[in-house]
Image 1 (tube, rainbow, N blue to C red):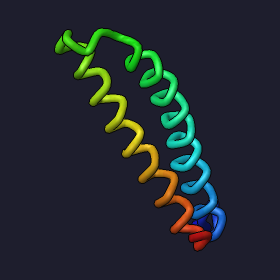
Image 2: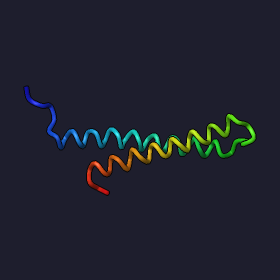
Image 3: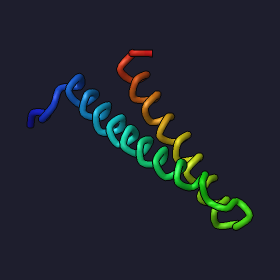
Length: 74
């Protein structure tokens, strides 16, 4: 049985899948964080939203940086 992809093709697939999802996640959380920053921060739920979206930005950044490192770009 032959492999459906070469190792280089598989690396590109992983890079596009992981980096692509991370980029979309980053844009989504930036948009949500901008909205959450306008909310009243005396409400605990609003502070939780701000924290959660900030953590989402960190995770998305790690995904993008990890994809770039896997390709040897950085």
